Length: 391
Ligand SMILES: [Zn+2]
Image (cartoon, rainbow, N blue to C red; front, top):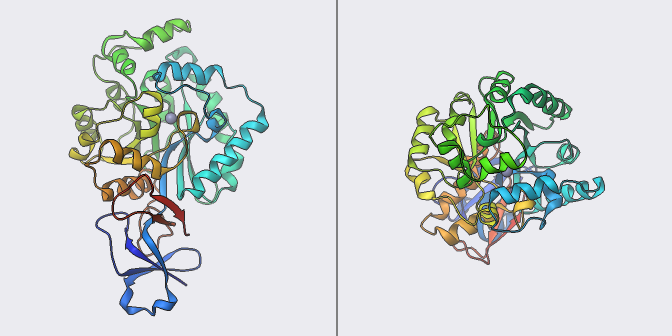
């Protein structure tokens, strides 16, 4: 049995506890949360700062870790994609070494579970050995070449089948983004996915050209398709924002994790929340600044009571893999958001989005959520705040 205390204990939801202790078994399973006065202080490990549950990183691409620093910052999504697709040839050893280093970095930064996108098998071996939990999203796209939808589906399905999940890990096949998946491929994915208790991750409303493509059929993405000699015959202009196309093709009985949402507005949120209460909104603020040099308006999400989660995205579009750094960035640019709210996004909301909330995401009796210590923290995040993993 272990007893931990600190100036404040945040359970993941709500106001912090003071003069309290967390009691766990040797594996970190929470046995009880009690008042300090009931315990002999010499039996308690007392820390300066705050104890918080392990972080949930709901969006990463481990397999892109080797491309750190390759793409320029602030160029926008389309030049970023061009950079990534034209520079994927790296030696296998380099890719594996970068994946292992990235996994270690996340673990040391207090992350306990990851929603991770895979297109290929590169990250599977590392995930099998990791002490973190993984929800692998095997991501499919056909760039609106509907005649290739079945071929692409089968290609990615064979990758998906190579992933053996263990230790409570999970996996699902998912569509990449509204601007890259034909109706035929959406239908194939949905047919092959369980009806309920599955998380479907999809990139969403990340860049103005994505919106213009669906609104008018013109703009940067329309030009991009032409530049790669890809016809848009099976694409239909909806005259609505891109998320509406995705909503029409996804299953409201599953958990849907919309990723980025940089341009999502109040109407989009209302439509999505009316469609399903099982919607989650993964924000990757540092990646948004890296790629597009803009952030979502978080007030829309708070006012709509949308469940926001946090993600790091990959090292291709971030300087590090740390949920604490994502929280600090939001705090720097939209400081009206209380720390308790940011922590909820970083912990319990993420655990719910990935269906890991029976074990992770909050300090509750029976869970083994991981225990992080925030140092140089007095109830407000600052540049100096750092995280140490205790359990
Ligand atoms: Zn991504």
